[in-house]
Amino acid sequence: MDVDIGNALASVASPGVSRDALDRLDERVATAHERIAVGRGDDEHGYAALNLPDRTNPDEIRAAVEPITGPDGGDIEALITVGIGGSALGAATIVDALDADLETVFLDNVDPTWVREALDALPLERTAINVVSRSGTTAETLANFLVVRDAFESAGVDWTERTIVTTGESGPLRDLADAHDLPALDVPDGVPGRYSALSAVGLVAAAAADLDLEALLDGAAAEAETLTGSLYECPAYAYGATCHALAARGAQVNAFMPYAESLETTAEWFAQLWAESLGKDGLGQTPVRALGATDQHSQLQLYRAGPRNTQVTFVTPRERASQSIPPTDVDDLAYLGDGSLADLLDAEFRATEASLAAAGRPTVRIEIERVDAFELGGLLYGLEAACVMAGELAGVNTFDQPAVEWAKKATRGLLGGGDFEEAQAVAEKSALRVER
Ligand SMILES: O=P(O)(O)OC[C@H]1O[C@H](O)[C@H](O)[C@@H](O)[C@@H]1O
Image: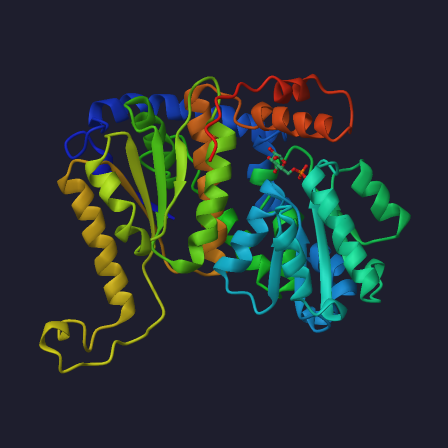
């Protein structure tokens, strides 16, 4: 990926970063880069994720997937992935971005109507199940898996022939995989869920959909090669450092706005990465999911004229599919005729970027060549490295998520799954009700 931070400079925007401040920050980027390199060298928790492009073995993933999908996915029409957060969003991002030729359903919520409708709509005799949980204990994932198994049994389909599991070394899901002799892959050590897209966690669904795993990993490896000790030479660090500097100057919100429909899920993945990694100690930017050009017609008003607390991150491919716009004899529409949808979307992007700069609002532009496996691998890796750099600069623990764990424990306590003091807080809720 390439990054253009020109519209985040103090000469353009407020909040904005001066060149002097960037130069000073660059010294801290060099130190942070050394820390990251040591962490990678020692395979330390979290930092190990940045080694995935070299560690992930696509043949191993395909070999585990093939028994349940048939060669090249030929035996199945659909894949249900049961997982949540980092155990679903990476896989969803990849299959959505790369337009997989397989129906993929992600059960990452436990809304009963939605789960029931999703299962009712699938040809279960031609559907495989991909269960993913690092801990193997996440309530939503385990509950949904039990519901899915039951639906298969009711339909007379042997789920044990159709299920692949990706989980940690031990835990209830590992036990279940062993008990039923299911193909099982490991969540690599030291890789938190939100950094695991380029491991079996994100790639089983991609393999089932017969996507190019090698190209994804090659793109990520090429991005890894760009990690150097200066933000002026490394796009990922330029992005991470600029976000850090803008946040420190009041950009509490980061609106992530790809100008490509297929990258809409990438914005969801980014939201988890940014929020769980950087939302610590009263710091962090609130990630907002946006989509160009659609959200020009809803959110843009706020970003241009609302509080000066937002940075907009654009992601735009240089190449797009061709779809011409037919000519018309309506005079007012003549400017559209003989053009293309790609030109229109690019013009929308450049106009939006300019409109924010003209109002002195900071934006960062991330460019990729096109939306393909190689470029997507690079984009995901680059954003992860950016996030790690932002975390280093902020001095937070980028790789834990104690606030999320708190709610997980409270939920388990409420359901009688253990004695968790967090559950007490539910009974202590204060109320001021206004009723119909
Ligand atoms: O993979 P699992 O252990 O099931 O965890 C799934 C998700 O659970 C929690 O919500 C964590 O905060 C996420 O980071 C994690 O991705």
